[in-house]
Image (cartoon, rainbow, N blue to C red):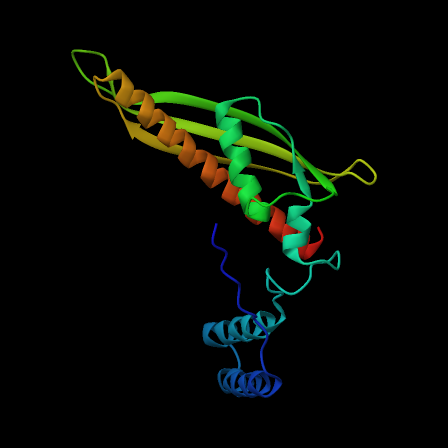
Length: 200
């Protein structure tokens, strides 16, 4: 999976002070009313934007790089084809598919999936469109003390067209399941990246 490095949100001191002075003069001019309130809010947002910590900064709160933290996650074995697809996507997201070193965390997941018909053809009673849904709740366990470091959940749905051909329907369902597994894996990857970056 290609990763895009987030840009730093830091501001130069001179430019932020100039912005502060300009907005302060504008607030004094209007003194009160909705215009002054809007300028106050804009000033607060402008200053707070300078304090944002980039997600993909050099090191995380643990003192390691984000890639080192993610690659230290051990993922529990899969129990079904869909779980294996999810696991494969997570492994690639965490360490690019490379061989894992000594794990520091274990990712426990509860995976549920369902498929339902959306559009029923009149006369035949056959479905024209169906939808599959994948829901995952997870716990990240710190192996050093067996404590839960963080928890979360993610879900995604994908629709697919049905036909009168059985093989085509099976292939369409398989593709939809692969899509939901990839999207849920992406979401969990982002959530855990944010956890390691913030430390909470």
